[in-house]
Image (tube, rainbow, N blue to C red; front, side, top):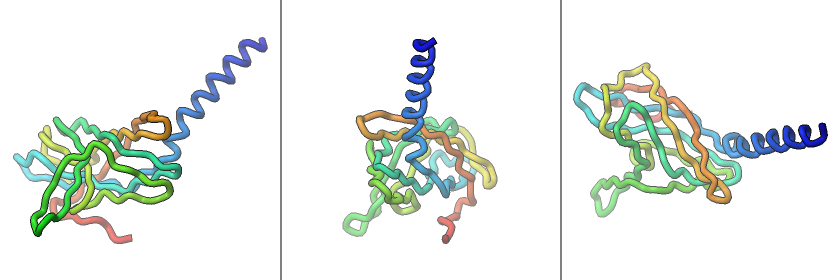
Length: 151
């Protein structure tokens, strides 16, 4: 009986420690810019906070053939966008993925995204010890001209 209790306790502790990172990372204010027929790319935007610090290392969505984390910035008066493989989430700080900055790029879209629909997103986060975890979220599709909501 002691062995069985020990095994159950080990499994439960493992489950709790495996879930700790998910509760450490908070993703909110998620939205996706709508598209028009034939448009093959759009952006997903959100606010991500990690209490102990983590790194966003990947993203996936079934509505897109390719999903990447992108950075948009102005260099010498020219707007440039590039994929990044890692986005640091400093401990206790909210990182905003917003138009004109970091965002999740959804490319090779499989269909038009209409306002009011919800797009599933899987975010891969790397925590302490290089352990990765996937966080499942959904973003509401907003009008093509939508900008972030004011808080």
